[in-house]
Image 1 (tube, rainbow, N blue to C red):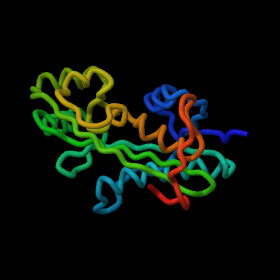
Image 2 (cartoon, one colour):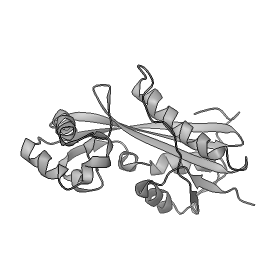
Image 3 (cartoon, one colour):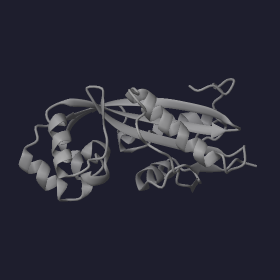
Image 4 (cartoon, rainbow, N blue to C red):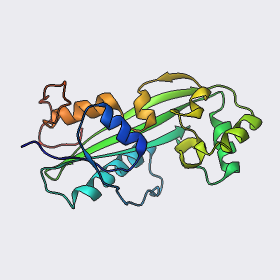
Length: 205
């Protein structure tokens, strides 16, 4: 009998992306503290949150379930840009990104049989020059208000992007290639995949 796949998120974007791969899955929200710990580096932060989300949901499931957690953060000059607190914060963030290249880090983590398997994906995103007036109009659309880095690449904010190097789906919230690969390595392939047997000893990858 095939294991149950659970997405540790209620994000509409992550649900849509995982559905794109052809999986049947359940969704359960992971209630964790997403605060940065001390001088935590961006890669450590995003990986920790992905793992904590998966573990938080997995602890209430049977051990053979596959629980997928994911987290995405926007990085500019090694600073983590969170969701904007207000319009002024949104303007500050987007002016930093204007005419610059920033990084989007997305971590995925799968918990199965009390073992954790994970990956981190880094994507470079370059913005055009943004004016204060353009940013203020964008704020009033409501889109940036719940987005890390104050923009949504899959929405209106996509018009700011002049170049992307890496995974578009990772910037949206769930990297399709890496997620499919990781789940296939755990004997949970997509409908068009064969299982891959490269993971050993249940180590984080």
